[in-house]
Length: 385
Picture 1: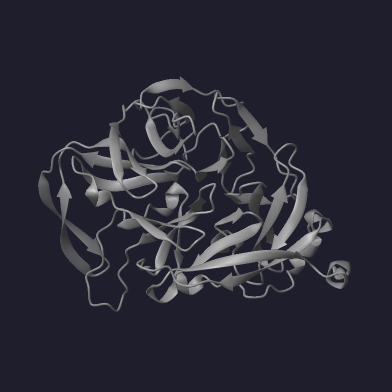
Picture 2: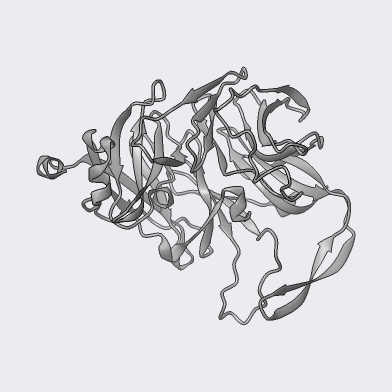
């Protein structure tokens, strides 16, 4: 798991409560201009637990999905306070990426099976229809050293690899078989990586000198194909807190989400637009026509439609999240989706496939697929809104 500064979040199983039957939304939604669009509510149906797949109490957000409806989720190894075990040393927590198909088949992707590398951390991953790629920091040899660390009143030691480290792209088949590794040049600090159907990579990071965001395309061998020009005003000029930011600072929250043969750059919790990047390198800004003050939290992968989750700050109810189907052509809001009262939408929906809202319940050590159906809200309810 990466730190919160990298735009990722932890989700504990105890807080994941997708509603069996959704309820009436908050007054905040009533005051939003988007409330005038058709309102749909989703109820979830539980399926059988996925055989052979265990779950930990926490996962890494955001979710990812492929075009066939498979959900990809990273389960995070955690240590509970009352376990009697020492707290983990500061740094990335161990993760295990797992895919769950619509038929209930589970598949894990084990980075410890890569034979020629000693991996220190996973920075990112991206699930494509034909393959799964990882962005990792690793070395080709191992030079173990003991380092002291402290967490609260606990003082201990951890073994680190002092060998030279580089960034690598690792490629796996959808069946979890390791295929190849690509060592990347240290031309700029890559934080997020995706791959087009053509095999060309899209990489997002920042310039080491002025901290300006960089979006580049890499050839299949990992070398630079071209840098992409971002229209001034469509992304912050500096993605960090300033030119004096620490050496190991990370970029502002960004996700790379598949949209057909394109990739969407989602600038989370900002007023900046979504950026659709085509396989040829074209960039098109998408500005969903949401209520004033709404900020996009995430984009939900879908096979036919386009969905975003937005949040708004209200005096009476604090920060509220809403899910909208929007037109990728002009940003018009087409539908508003409610999943119930009290839960965060970005936690509860992994993707939309063939009109169904897909998710999982990962409590009690099991992974249970959840299939959601959206139905129009009653006329009476809509009139009240």
